[in-house]
Length: 485
Image (cartoon, rainbow, N blue to C red; front, side):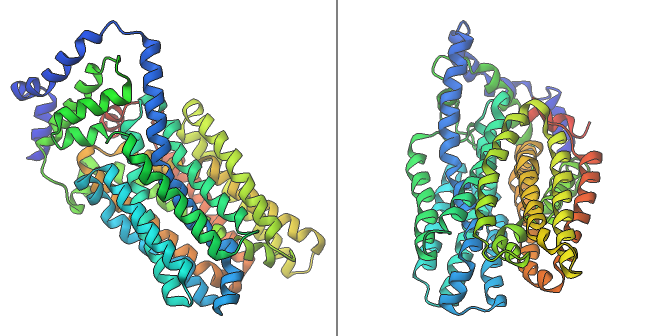
């Protein structure tokens, strides 16, 4: 019944309601039809960039959280006398918190708005970092790590969705990719500072700074116009859209497009998880969930959380050199991915990324195999580090950012909260499995561990090639209309 109503409205079934919704936005903006395209573009870019810069402070926080465990591992284990199993729990419990945060993230963002969801996440993360800073044993340490995980679980949904909803379609790919770039930046800052400061100082500096910046910045940016329209806040919707597009911009066409989508969605009932498996939604859900499985099955959270240990296993006397190289390579490669995203497209970068992560894991696994059989031992550290660096470079150019970008693009607005939560849960469940088991797998067989990840990389290439659509250069409404066509 709901599906038939949706289709009737899209065909113009309820014209009076349709005109009532459109009229205020067409009337109020028609006087600006003769605006300069250059003025429109400049106004749009300025506010879109500012709003994105504030939002991605949450991404920096995300990176700081996941990057903290690698450089802090040996100092924390020594000071608090933690075993490998206890530190594996500390390293991975962030994913449990993030999983719970993911369950609630969509509903929170849909209920209180994208801005308030990011503010709530920041406050929770601040509390978690303070607990880690003050910890004198594993209980408070794990509690703080859990709460930072819960906070970034909300960020994983709220940040990319907010950026996708406020960005002009020609900038959406690049701006949304800033989410991954700042995750990488936050992680790299943690890796680099962790080599020169104590773990408590690292927790205080890298953990609190992004949250404080985000809370301050939220006062200067608008709420998502699409969320305001969905909630029926017409005046606030127009004001937010004008703020984002510039005071002289003609917003009538975009407002009409958004409201046509909202009008169709209003006829549909509130979604439940079971609704995601209806025929009209199953394909985008399968694509988004599949991409998150691809992202995690390559081993990123095990390799990233315990990079120092991996380098020491390879034969390096200290993991610092490899850790610094790991941190430095992420940022320039992520920038390359951002530049290419709206030029080459999403699918080709995902294919390149999947192949590169597979190759990197295969090289590292081979290095450990040679070490186990005492073959060319002097080359083992070089091969292992090279494989890890190829892996992280390849991950950064595509598989890190693009699954989140596509997730924010392919779901209709009325199921975005429910579907987004499901996708984030899958992502964080995979992150927990990999991050908790990685130390045990490494003790079992370093070569087997990395070859296992390489095998998943081969499967990932097939998934992307067969099922992932190209979304470059399309509006959100165009993507959602075409994905089931």
